[in-house]
Length: 111
Length: 115
Figure 1 (cartoon, each protein chain N blue to C red):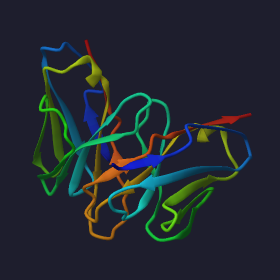
Figure 2 (tube, rainbow over the protein chains, first blue to last red):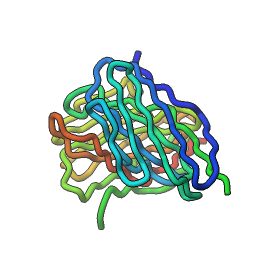
Figure 3 (tube, rainbow over the protein chains, first blue to last red):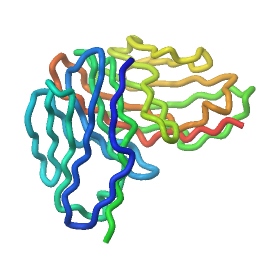
C-alpha cells in the first residue's frame, strides 16, 4: 500500500523554530508538497520539492531526501497564526492523477 | 469570483436522500479532484478528472457519482449514503503538466452530515 507518516502533534512557542517530518512509501514519486490547513479552512499550498535539497520560501523551508524517502517542513520565527495542521503529500505519478496525503501534524504555537 | 468555490458549505441529509455537491474553479486549470476529509484520517483522493475525463476512481462506493460537464465544473452526486460518509468533502484543481509543480488549489469544502 501507499502511506505517509507524520507526527500527530507538535507544540512550540512564538519565535521558535519547528521541524515537521514526513516519511513516505509510495508506488512512485514525482514530488513532495506541503499544505497548511487552519481549523474550518481549506488546505493551502506551502511548498514543493521534486529534487533533493532545501527550498526556502520566506519563513518556511522544505527539504527532501529521495534516497531516504524523507522530507521535512521547517517553520522559523513562529507566530501565533502558524497554529494549524500541516500535511505532506506525494504525487505518485507523472500526470497529477495520484496524490497521497499524510495524516497531518497539528502545530500549536504558544505565547 | 476567483479561486475554487464549493456549494453548499453545509449539508445535512438522510440516508434515503439524493443530493449533489458543486465545485467551480475560475483558474483555467485542466484537472479537478474530489477529496474526503474525515476526522483523524488523511485526506482521501476520491476522483480525478483530467481534461474532463475521469482518470482515477480510488475504489469509491457507487453511492458517490462524479460528473464533470466541462473543465470548470465538477459535481458529486450523492444517494443512499451511510452515517460513516459524514465528512468534509473538498474539491481541488490544478494545472497538470508532466514535470510541473504540484500546486493544488482547494475549495472551502462542504461539511456533510448523514443522519
